[in-house]
Length: 112
Length: 113
Image (cartoon, rainbow over all chains, first blue to last red; front, side, top):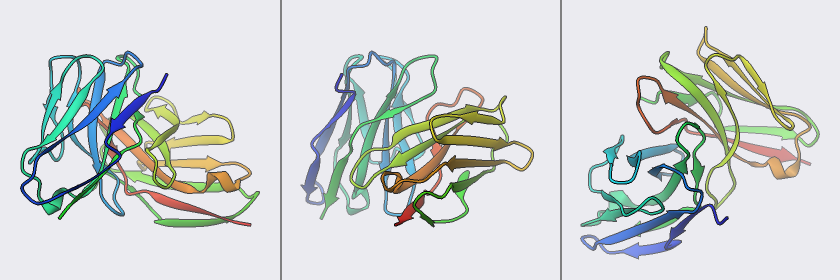
């Protein structure tokens, strides 16, 4: 199993550009999550999806949209990137009934 | 403010010694706690977890202690090795059906040879 995979690994954007961060898991997990991590900080929840077809806001959803494309894939979209969105983005997933979340390797995003 | 925090941003220990990383939380409704290890340039890696109905849980070389009275969580690493060098995060899941984890800021564990 590849676990949780994320693409791209790195991205540089100009202010106002849009992009989609991709996440996929092959563990048949039900729930998927997007977090951001800023220097010296823990991870903060942006959005999550408890199951295919449902999404909910987390702690810091402003400026982002998400799509749960199917059970395996959960994408995060920045419609108009801002410098404040410079961060490392982590996707995670977990199996229903179990608490442990498993994380991907992250996408490092720089917005100029 | 942060619901989950750590007492020290950096902890330096000698190789072979035991390490204790502390975490305080403020949400008494939290029912699940978890420790992650994050190496440079990588995603968080699960270490050990504990439910609120327990006060101790042991894994391989790691032990998590939960003191609900003072809302304190600790991670003990026995016989610390160079490969243990990383940032360690505690996280909590609030009760009441909320999803997602709330993370602390992290403690950087440095292993001295």
